[in-house]
Length: 469
Image 1 (cartoon, rainbow, N blue to C red):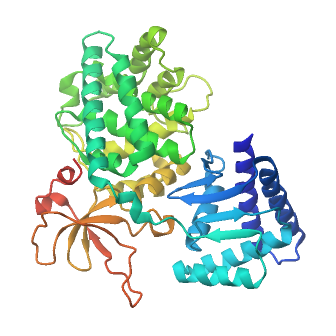
Image 2: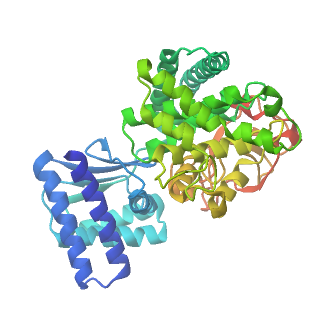
């Protein structure tokens, strides 16, 4: 019930934002939206004795609990998130029951401030105006200092590294066991999954950074771990619960287990696959589903893992494989894993695939509907990684060379990520590359650094994973 009330409140907040933005204040639709917002807010206050809506990175919290987003409300709640961030609002606190007129004052001022992208100064001016209007039942506060998130970066990075290395080792054992017809240690996989989910919930930046590791010899195992990390991180942004994230991660880790039956000479073939070789490659979906089914009886593998292994190459219009015999609705897990699988595969250089730059891959997935990926899930991946994904090698207007470290916590600044500067303007490599925020401005209000070009790290003999492992 608390989660339902929180979700209703944020949806009502979105409707009020939209109504006041699109219609005159006296419009009947505006009145209905504001009345609905006041009602939902007061209901939470009455039942829980408080209402504190908070922005934390890319998540929305109501009374300290994250609101569980889903595919249907992702866009609307994303609008609430971006509007609050543009206005510099980190917290909305309801002191006592407020009426629709008071909510109208607040939302009107938030819309004005967000339209100007006022930043800290605009936020202070907005709060002053709200005080002049006599609004004291609803308070607004700025966001928590984002720099605090990086205070213990070395320790968190080392913890993420241990989790990643252990997960790759477990995946390797599982795939090798499957290739030899053994069941493998599913309990070990589950233990590794627990650590991945923990890391994504507490230490997402460091763990996602490790997905830049691309070892051709261990491609299948590293690919499975990377797809698992991306899937769990996207699932988190969609508001999945911890048990759901665990099931999603397990499905993602096992999605390509059928590759164990594809002959090595096909996997390593340099030329285009023949029709028969392509048929064997595509068979990994149903072979994987059968393998997981055989594990499920005594290892407690969720049924959705079987479905995801079978469906992750089908595509929403069913133009992929295997061909569907009858009408079906693809699992959300399958669609999430399909997006994560395609993204990581496109970045990797293998025998019959040449890796692309991360920004190009995301751009193609977003702009080309013929590729067949759910646009909401691609948007969630872009929100996770930014327009310039983790590991992208960039040249700055200061002529420094940098690697993208993380997406900007402010979703309105996705084109200005956090970057790790690895060389100075003279081309001297930095021993301890600093992480800088490309959204930072100087005293004159100009951005200190701006990306002018994405470049190939191999051109500069940069091994991207060295800066994350």
